Image (cartoon, one colour):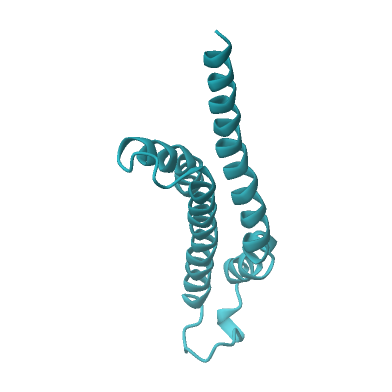
Length: 128
């Protein structure tokens, strides 16, 4: 899961640099920020979905007869721990909300900071 956050942090710089190097600034800062935010959101929500499937698969390993219920010898402390991980994980539920806020905020910070730096550089060139 940590690799997903590293990838999410690298998305805005990669979009920005690829726009400058490959597309000759045809994408623009606003569309680049939107693309970056959408990509980060897909990474965060996709990671949460995949982790949820992983947790459900771990829990399903304890269901020996495949009926979806844990009775008798299927109810073990390990099964209860796996069930607790599946049911008590609020971060997977809130991933679209927190991921969206992070994606918009981080993309706005990177692309907004770039816009301010470009504006300051142009003013400095024209004054000097």
